[in-house]
Length: 443
Ligand SMILES: Nc1nc2c(ncn2[C@@H]2O[C@H](COP(=O)(O)OP(=O)(O)OP(=O)(O)O)[C@@H](O)[C@H]2O)c(=O)[nH]1
Ligand SMILES: [Mg+2]
Image 1 (cartoon, rainbow, N blue to C red):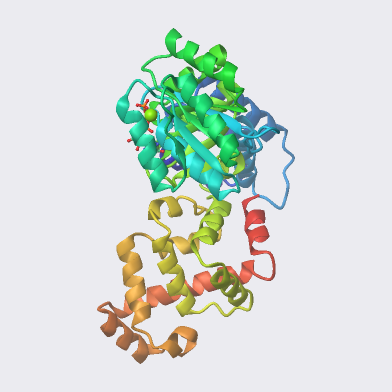
Image 2 (image 1 turned 45 degrees about the horizontal axis):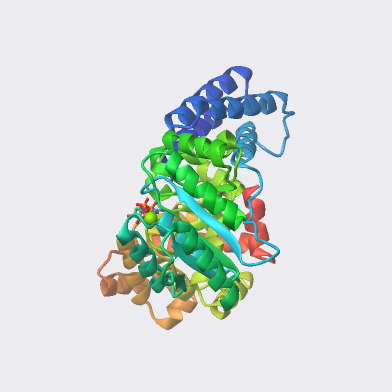
């Protein structure tokens, strides 16, 4: 997501860096290019205007801090302004003091409501809740079946409706009753989609809202529809009042226009983003992390969380200790590469890595899965001793390793170099609070 925008902004910053000193003239030129990049990314013009004004005002009024280069300062300002239009702090879901809380999941046809209902239920259950899902899409027989298949996949209960419960309202009320009886604390109501926002849909949703008092009215919008998603969310909010947006299909949206506009245009927060078809492909929306990602500074915190989730805790602590003690070995390096492959779509992991800064060193080692496999083959051809102590790997050992892994000595050298860089980087980061230090890097 955001690839094209990131690429364009990177180019702007690169040009600025080439200039050395920040002058009014080159700043104007940079602002013009940032504006173009945003418009080309399909960002709403009001949002572009707001962003540009903020950036200009701050850049011109900025006293030159000697610790940072002018370009770094501009990047920082752009980041702050992005965070501002994205909504500053992450928005938490609202729950009722008198459970079960009801969340209504609404949106146009095909936007991803049913999938998001499943994803959100899964996310909630991983975060200490006991959700129950129900589909009130009574117009399409397959719709309710779809949700029940999803519920089965995520091993969560679904309310299928008792005899005589046939209208959306009856089904939703039935689900709430069932949740109360079975100690479920959130009811996720997947509603029917429409091609357009029409009166019949509004009536039905108003009725559901009136009877259920949902703490969340979540509007599901398809990021790939760009400004159409923004417009429909705006209209929906005007007519019905929403409490937040789930933006789906961000994985297929290289521009990011909807993500950057929806908060500012509707005044309602973006709460989650869908980043794939699988049921774990949902992330809470963190404005600051997304801003960093857009600017190519990477989203290291999300990456770390992802790593933490997918690796064994004990192993992780041991690894961290070895890093702190500067004992990160080739063996660990290989284990890390394996973890990386396990973590799922490599692109989504890579997109979180900064394109500037010290973590750049990681990138060369992970270009594509084939490259990863090659690196692994090289390390596999080393003896255990060599893996624990890379310093003993001399010329003849390198030749043997190359032969053993079907690669060349140059390629072996390359891997050793990458490993050395990673080790150096870890060394500079370690000595307490890896996560804090990485976070500081992102500032
Ligand atoms: N790539 C990708 N696909 C998604 C995402 N979210 C949903 N989809 C896909 O979008 C399609 C429609 O999703 P549904 O959840 O059925 O949409 P819906 O809003 O419930 O559709 P209706 O009930 O017909 O209005 C499905 O093929 C989903 O797999 C996402 O974040 N990324
Ligand atoms: Mg549906």
